[in-house]
Every structure is written in structure tokens, then in C-alpha cells.
Image (tube, rainbow, N blue to C red; front, top):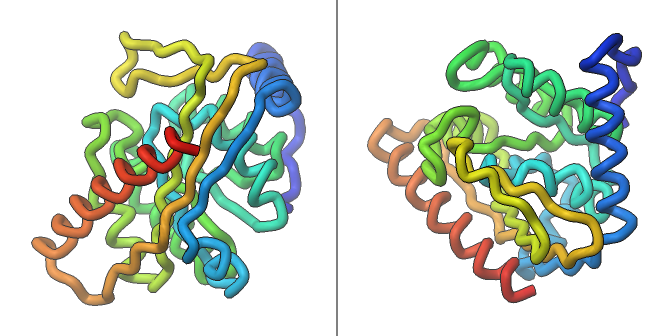
Length: 223
């Protein structure tokens, strides 16, 4: 587990406590079911570092899913350098995850380097491949480049909450899970990206990952 940072002062600290408290309430009251591709458990048992990916609008489900299924693994999560990213980073720390600040629009090169180093040190990493600004459900090349350069496999993750609010005015249509409902989740088989691929091949793997994320959502809905 990553060491927790000191409590943040003022309004930010209060919002982080409220957010973490809400997700812990969700963890206690929601009914979870998880489906996994048969290749997923052996991948975890292999000890290999994994790149977990999910769409940006599902991020509020993920700390609880980590607590339920992956809490024995060291995991670093990309979080933008915006104020929202600071709040998200503070909340996920409460669940034992380590935030790495940066995104494709700001601090991206440094964040990618930190993700690379985390994988090399045996950590898993978490990336929202359509974040932080979209387009929604469109994979950007960074996650494919990271997999190609490290040899770490990509696993698609999907969640579906029966009780949720959808913020349709946000670019990603953020899902806010509500306590007391049912949450279905799924993990895909690993997607492996060869090293030294061309830009055209990277784009091809972006489309493959989009397809895998869609298939994993179908698996989650049926969980």
C-alpha cells in the first residue's frame, strides 16, 4: 500500500473526506457481482504488472472495485492536474491507491514517465484512455504507447450500476453510483501490444482497445 499524504486543509480536505465517505457507504450498501475472462486470474497470479483501463465516466466506481477485488496489489492511478484531479487523487488515497498527477492536456510527458517507472517497479497502473477531456469513448494513443514500451498487458475494466445519476452536461456523462443498488463489474482478457510498433499500428491497437472495452461492458451488464 502507498503511504498516505498529510490531510489537505480547508475546503479541499472537507470535500475529499465527504467523497471518500460516500464511496465507503457505497461499498457497504451496494450488491457487487464481478465477471472475469478466464485469462484474468492467471494474469494476476503471474505477478506481472498490469495496465488497467476504463472509461472516464466510470471512475467513481473504481475505488470500491479496487477494494473488493484488487486490494492486495500496489496500484498507481493517473489523475489530472486540475482541481477535480486533486479531489480525485485525495479520495483514491483513502482507499490505498497512489495518484500520479498529469494528463494528455497538461503534464502528460511527466505523468507517462511516472507510469512507466511504476510499471517497471512492479506496480499496476490505472488509465482512463478517453480522459481528461474526451472525446468520450475514444482511446488516446498514450495507453497503447505505454503498453508497447513496457511490455505490460492492458486489461479492460467495465462497471454498470443499476442505481446511478448521469451528469449529461459533463463531457463524459459521468456516472454517480447510488448506495443500495447493484453494481456489476467485469475484467477482460489481457491485450498485449508488441514493442516498436508504428504510429499506424498504435492507432489500430487504440481501436482494438475500444472494441475490448465495449465487449467488457457487455460482460459487466450480464454479470
